[in-house]
Image 1 (cartoon, rainbow, N blue to C red):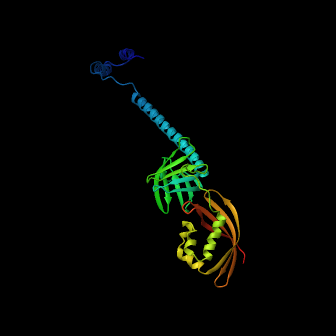
Image 2 (cartoon, one colour):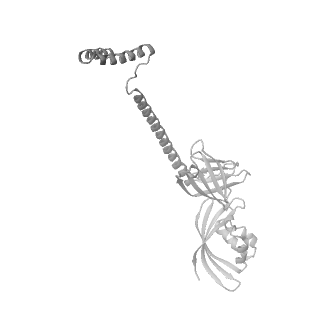
Image 3 (cartoon, rainbow, N blue to C red):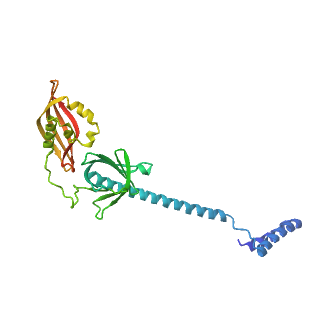
Length: 305
C-alpha cells in the first residue's frame, strides 16, 4: 500500500474512532515526519535494507572463498601430477653430471619416492644416486622447481626444469654443476663412451694379485671411496696378516654401464697357518678416471670352513 493511502486511512480512522486529543498528538507527529522527509530528505529507509546488503556481501565472500579453494585444489592436483611424472622419469633413468670444474660423472638412481609433507621444503620427489666414482648422494625435487642435494653431509641447492622434448630432466645447481636425467644410458656426444679395457672379474683378480705382491697402497686404490672411508689403518692391519689369496672361481651376476656384481670363491692363507674358504659377493662401480672397476661393497655369502 502506498504511503499516501496509509496516511488517508489513518486520518479517517482517527476521526471516526479516536478522541480529538489523541488525533492531535498523532497527527502532529506524522506531520513532523512528513516535513522532515520532504524538506530535509530524512525519509525512513525500507526495513531490512542493510540486512539485505550484508547478506549479499556474505554470499559474494563465500563464493570468492569457494573459488580460491577450488584453485588451490586444482594446483595441488597439478603438482601431484607433475610429481608423478618427475618420479617416473627419475626412477627409470640414468644420471649424467658435469661439475663446475669440468669433471664428468655418470650415475644411476637406486630408489625414489614421492613425499607429501606439511613443510614444502621437505615435499616433492626424493631420489638416491650411486655415482661412477663410488660416491652416493640424495636429491629432492620440490614443487617450486627448486632442488636440494645432499652429499657427504653437505647440502646444495639448484633448480630443475624439463628439456625441450620433455624426455630429459635437467638440474642447474646454484654452484654451476649440471645434472641430466634420462630413461636410457646418457652419454654426451662430445664425450662418447670408451671401450672398456677390463672386466669386473679381471679387475677382481688384479686386486688380489696386487695383495699377493704386498703392494697394499696399490690394492687400496682398487677400492671405491665408500670402502676407503672405513680407514686405511684397519685395512693394513688385516691384510698384513694374510700370506696369500687364491681366487678359485668368479661368476658375473650383473653388469650395466656403471655397476656390476661378481660372486667369487676365495681361499685365504694367513701367516699364522689358518686357511679360510668363503664365497663373497662384490659390487663394483665403474671409475672413469682410472678406467677400471672399483670394489664398492663386499658381502659374505658362505663360509666353507
